[in-house]
Length: 296
Image (cartoon, rainbow, N blue to C red; front, side):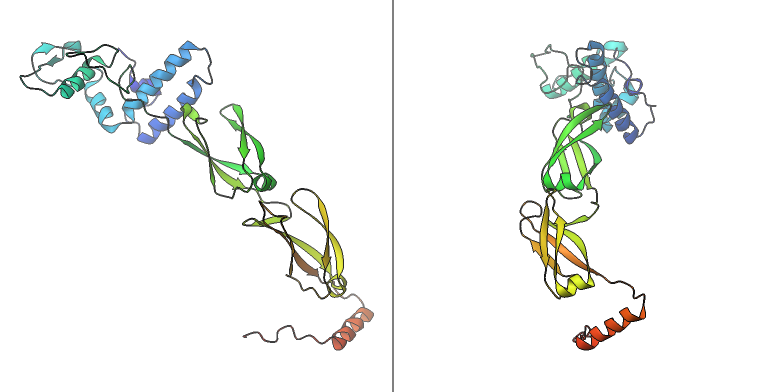
C-alpha cells in the first residue's frame, strides 16, 4: 500500500491548502532529480511527494482520500475488491465510469481492463500529473546592470544560477526563467532596481544633477560629467544658466535615450561686508524680477 499522503508531505490531516503547498515546495526542492543526479532513492521520494500533492491539492480527491483511504469508496454490492470493499457492475454502465471505478480500486498501472483501456496523460501511481507551479521571488538589480544589461548570480536553495538581465529593464517588471524554479516549474523574478549614487532614471532617459557656482552659472563654464558607460564628457554651461535648467547629451541614456545634466546653482553664504556690497552692486547693475509674470 502506498505511504499515507499526509505522512509523505509531513503535514497533519487538518493542514490548510497553503500548508500543503508550502510543504510540497520545500520537499520538491530537496528531492528534485536535478539536485540529486543518479540518486534513485531521491527520485522515488520525489515521485511520492508529487503523487501526494496531486491528491491533497485537489479538494475532491482529498475528501475522497480522507473518507475512504486507499481502498476507495464502496460503489455497490457484488464482487469483493481490495480491503473487503465490494463493487457491482450493473447491467448498463458507461465505460468511462467503469474506468473511474477501476482506478479507485487498482490505481493506474500499465495494464488494461475490460476492453483494454489504458489511461493516458496520467502517472503510473494514480492522479493526473500537474506541472509544478511557478515560483516567484524578488531580486535586487544594480542600477547600471538594469540600464546596460548584464549577468547576476542568483542563489536559490543552496545553488547558484547565472541570470541574464536585458538592457533597459524597469523596476517592478517580472523576468521568467522557464524550468528553473523548484520542482521544475518556472522561476519568476520580480525586479527591484536599486538606486544609483548619482544617476536617476526617467524612462529611457538618465538624469544627473550637476552643481555649479554662481560665477559659473552667470559667466558660463565647462564641467566634466560622468556617463552610464563610465566615460567622462566635457559639457558647456551657457552664460546665464538658471538652477533647474537641463542640458542634453543625446543618445547617452538607456537604449537610445538621452542623458540630461540638471543644473543646480550652489549659493554661498555672504561672510563679510565687502562681499555683500559687491552682490548689492551687481543686483543694481543687473536688475532681475524673477517672479514677474507668475499667476500668484
